[in-house]
Image 1: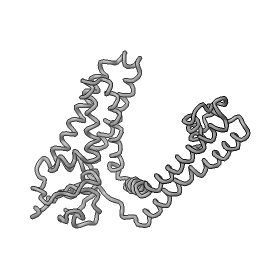
Image 2: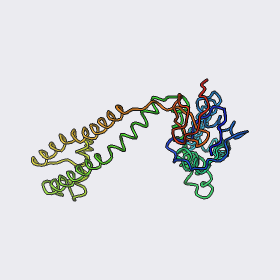
Image 3: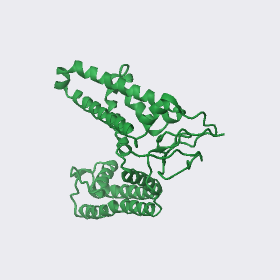
Image 4: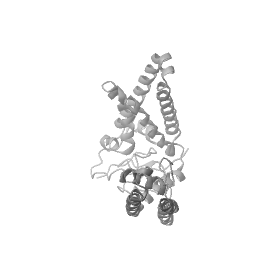
Length: 302
């Protein structure tokens, strides 16, 4: 039997979470509910302040890592750079622990996209004590800036981001077939150029000739290898013209898929969350959770 939800406005866990189990447990209450509202709910004033502060901390920590990579700056300010990094690591660790503590299904959050990103934001520092070369991986914190879409309530951008992902998944098989055809073309043309030009003109092997074919058909044209014979130049001209089609085909595939997504477009999601299953993205005018069927409290905005 589903326990009645709290009357406090809620938000969501990470999008795309797995379907909840049949037993949801007791509803959130007390300090965990208050912490959950602040940490996870970007539609509230406290939630926006918390997340914007987090964004500032992430940007400052990234700036710190970049400054530390400058040898002259690192030598002059090594002491305070180290203390600042420890402070940021402690802050992000505390925030991660609070996120796990204020949800009823911590493992579900820990295995979600943002849960993994939050863990990777602090893990390199601890691993750096044993493997110092891993310190540079703290730049992965930049992924946490993806939360800005929810923090600033840029629902149109969130919808476009999700639509692009769906279009990429729907186009994957077509693009894979196209890339396979391109691969066959560059293998054949590279082999032909190896025969036509030969090692004396820089085409010393088939792999080198295939490299030339790839750089030509993609219209990059580094110029380190160029055909010298008339026949080779004619083949190169065909490859260059073919390159325009190579660029256009995947673009057309993606455009068609995005147009199809737009036809079946659903209303933009919010950061509204169900207290029972912790799924987010519920519509503002919904009265029941579309995932578990639990009644939802009134959705309030400020």
